[in-house]
Length: 237
Image (cartoon, rainbow, N blue to C red; front, top):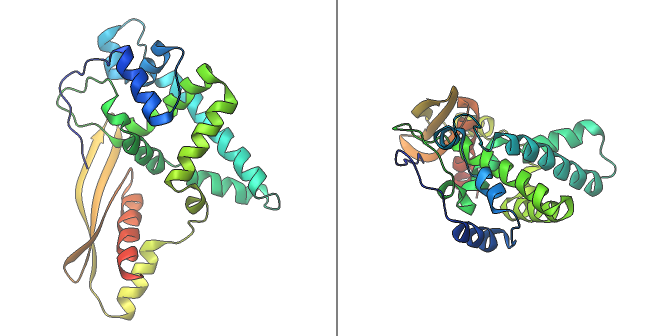
């Protein structure tokens, strides 16, 4: 789904932001300005203060590292017999952009982001980036232990222990099935957009002319895999 926004969105007042974070993450924040920055896209930061450019990019950088650390520690404890290579593969499945985008939309972060994109449509990665920036803000405000507990709770609610074992190539599985049962399989690009140099695809998969799934991703491969996964869920029940 592509979200459209007005030319410029006003910042939420402090009370609203505090209430949102208390409701969604069950935390009482200490530094409101820090969290306002976490939800401020670079396009809005330039509108507010072109000299400072006080956007969420630095918090995103920090949050990305904290997220990696939290997931790495979780996997290290949970799978004491696995080698480094296997743990790295598991971690990459958890922290991939599609998962962060999905968590951000589920929490409603897309409604909290201040941005000034004009007539451009917001790329989903902006929401995922805000998730990382929020993690960075929590780390500064609450410390590692509180941030770890909140992040792990969110990841588990959204499929952490499923993601780390997701080795199935859904597209290949779908091709094998369609060939075996002589079904017509087709993937079609619904839309391809570029925002700030980044691509975003929406792809639909058809079986015998009927729609079986829609996928979204930063590459055709990722979008096709997501669409194929939806189709597999309908077929292999």
